[in-house]
Amino acid sequence: MLKSMVYVAMLLLLEDTTAQNPIKKRLAPPKPSTKGQCCDEVRSLKVQVANLTSILEELSRKQESDLLNVVRQMLELDKQSRQQEARVTEAESKYSEINNRVEIIQMQASQAVTKTSSDAIYDCASLYSKNYKISGEYRLPADDFLGTPDLDVYCDMETNGGGWTLIQRRKVGLSSFNRDWKQYKSGFGTIRGDFWLGNDNIFRLTRQPTTLRIEMEDWEGETRYAEYKFFTIANELNSYKLFIANYSGTAGDSLRYHNNTNFSSKDKDNDKCVDNCADLRKGGYWYNCCTDSNLNGMYYRLGKHTKNSDGITWYGWHGPSYSLKKVEMKIRPQGFRP
Image (cartoon, rainbow, N blue to C red; front, side, top):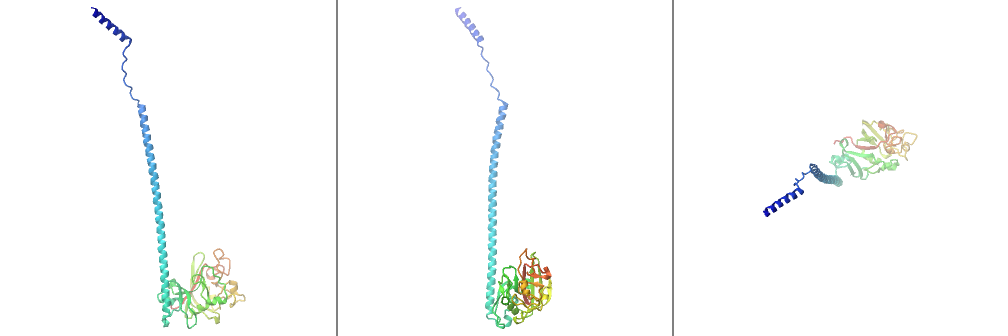
């Protein structure tokens, strides 16, 4: 009986305790926040984009560097190619010059054993007929009949069939043509530059029927020519008198006025004027009274070439006050056939 009462009391005590301290219900775990998860994904994407951008920039820099290297290599190759081409051109030029000199030496050696008139070398036309067809400087042998020595000449083997011996050239302007009688008699200047071959030598070359060709160039680059089918000069005793005939060409006939006139220089006045034309026109020439042309006058450069009447003039083309840029006088036999 006592045990039962104790048991009941314990039960009552237990219920009272439970009522005073109820057992807290177990809470469910919180659900994850959707907003926080979205922010994490955005940050991750931004990191990936930044990484990709960095990679692309690095690739771009490398590609640009590679492109610059390729361009440099191409420029260097182009430079080497041009240098090689220049060396080849220079070598070809030197070979051609050496070959030409060898041919000239061979020609001069053969002249030493010349026996007949058909083998003789009189002028550039004779050289051309022996297959010397490269324009340049040659040496003509001494003329025993006239007692003249060897003569260095420049041969034009190209113009209008070739075979031309130059007797005058104006193109540089460094040599004065205002010379005395003696200098015009023997010649002056340099064969590859400006020169006058010499009246004695011109007389020597025109003993046979000869054609004269005069080629001119102005400061605008235009060219003209005058050709005289017949050309010769007398000897010194007859003042190297000029004889010409049968003009043709594009420059106008400005040498006809000088036909049948003596040669004059600054110290020997042989013209048909009271005045000394050679002194007025600053050159030696076949002056009449005074001139329709003045191919041995003063050389005036661009800018001053239209202000004087003593320049290199050809009235039939540019009148009395236009000094030409370039002139060549050349001769060959009338019977020449290329």
